[in-house]
Length: 174
Image 1: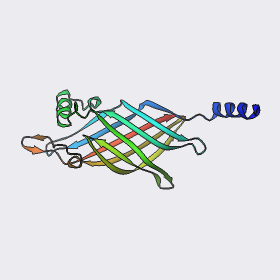
Image 2: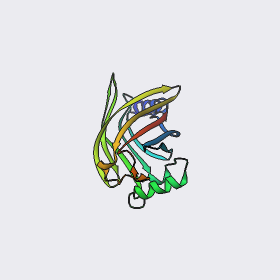
Image 3: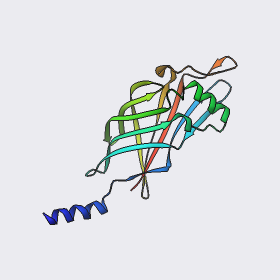
Image 4: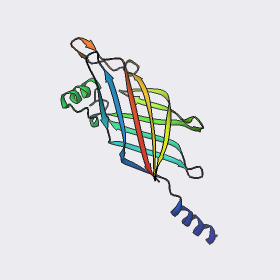
C-alpha cells in the first residue's frame, strides 16, 4: 500500500497535466465591410481543461472571453461593438466542449457556443503544434451574426458581412 502511494506521488511529479498559458493564448474576430475590414483580439481568456492523464490529451475544455476585452486598435470601434453585442446584458462568450476526438487528420471538437444570449452546437477542427515545452491548439470558426441574433453594424448605410471569422489559439506549458 505504501509503495503504491509513493509511486503515485513520484509519477505525479514527472507527469503533471499541462498548465494553461495566458500570454500565448488568444481569441480573434475578423469582420468585413465593403470599405474596409478589421480584427479584434482578446488575450484575456479563462480556460478550464480536463486532461486524460494516461493519453496526455484534452478530454473537455471550456473557454470564457469577456466581450469588453476585445481590442481592435480603435477605442470608438470597440465601444460600438460593445453596444452592438449588448455587452452589458451579455458580457461573456462561452464555449464548452461536449466531445474531443483525436484522429490522424487532427482534433475534432464539438460543443456549445453561447454568444449574445444564444446557444448553438458547433464543430471545428483543431490543429496541435508542439513547440519545445509548449503545446498550442489553434483553429478557425466561421460564425453567422444572424444565427446569434446580432444586428449587423453598418457604415454609410452599408452593413458589415454577416459572416465573421473567429480564430483561436490556446497554449499550455508541459
